[in-house]
Picture (spheres, rainbow, N blue to C red):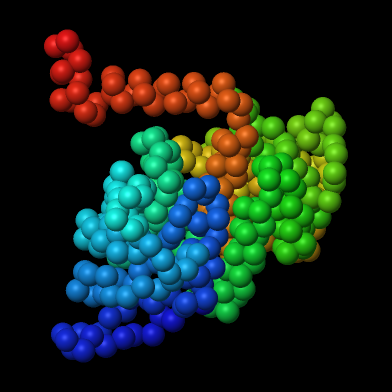
Length: 351
């Protein structure tokens, strides 16, 4: 997927180890990112040079057109500052009669930019601009995972992750996405059962069981699985029982009870990361003759890092208009009473 060959810099004579993105990967990633967010007019990926400047355009979505000059300029700023950049109310098009917002950020691996993404969006409030920047940065986790994948087995996992992520994005609801995910994981990793649950307040609730359309949330099985998920989330780590490292001081009581009740040989639970901590977990159960090896766990962990933010985004979008309104009011209050915008607050205080 990535051409990680060393490239000689003709100007300095130095050899660069910066990986270069393949065109097909860049196009697939950019198309997925732009389709995920409503209101994106145009997007572009840029190849950074060793000099710290934009070297070339890797991919443009949906194709060449108006605003490419503005996209290149904000991408250069984001690359120079090594951070996300937002520009509001930017004019473009014939006679500069059209207005848009611009968002750009570099995607870093080991603190080095692999590519720079810039998007042109319809004008919107600052809260939504920040949300789009976060989505782009979350999407960069997938890119980072692909960059780090070297072996043939890891590349195979990367292809599976890419297909699954596209499927998750394509589903309308988080429940449908969760159901498809657990079914695919059960088939891909040869599991007897795969479960997914999401945090609801202080507890976690099971939302999907592989190859099961409906289930009774009051059954003992469901409660055992939810307890195992809470156990992993409380310790913010992957739990496997029987574990490969017995020296680590971890609590696996709920996992042991699940194995004892169901007669399953091996249980692995992986937390799903979100914007502010774990949003849920995935529990996989296998026969004792087929334990989880290190490659499988690494692949599952990279998958969780990719789909976790996407599932969180879908669940946030499913909230009621009332809940979304409360969040907007909270953000506005934070802007007024929080630690930023000191000049505005002093002016309000004086008034």
